[in-house]
Length: 284
Image (cartoon, rainbow, N blue to C red; front, side, top):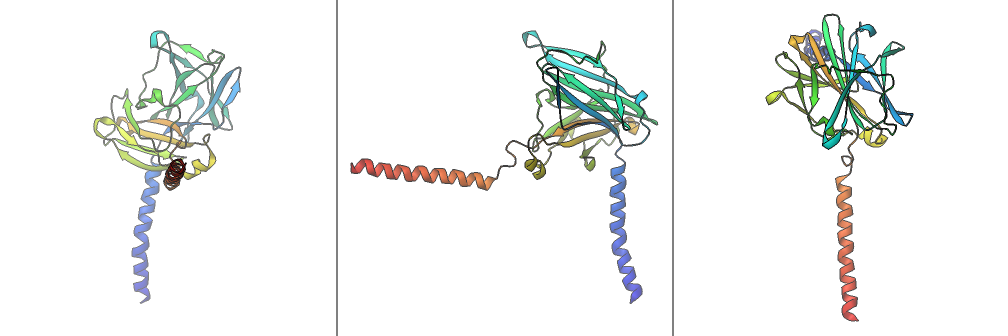
């Protein structure tokens, strides 16, 4: 009887343990270098300073091996665009590699980084909208003439995204990639936790909708979830990432029942008012 009970327990626990181990292994296999933005922006010289930290999922990333480029896109004459590329040095704080991007004008900034850790090449991308009244560029940045065509994940319509919200479908595809690992899989990491993987859809596009988060609703519009998309390229010898800070939706947390109750109360008030004043008008 005791042997049978032990056998049943083993047959019950082992599959569960196997699933948990495989899941943990699958999550640990998501290797990437990605950006992460600080929650607070700072003002300086009539401009905005935004700090980013470059994070690596494995040990061994060296500051000397990181190449950084950021591309500034702003409106020009005749509804055209002015595209300029810059480079800037990162700095180290308590073992973390950081960069501060200053913006003194309205511009869209694409922040790119490339590094090699071991035998694997990593590319990281982040999107930033800059504001300011000084009209100046980052004084610590160096203008470069060549815009690097590194592999990157492109958010469809990213030039129109300023405030990415939960509940918004995001369409992502790869650009400047000569070889793509098959099968094509996109890993999704939210707040440093792998949440799943998705196969590529037709045409090389991925679609993901960040779910509504009650925590964001309670915190406010400045709160964010750190969302990172990762795709492996060239048979796993390189990986690209896209970082997006995701905020709560303006209307995503509104209670449907509460809204319907307000509408019903308003309609009832209008109906009673019409009957009341209509009868008074006829009596007079």
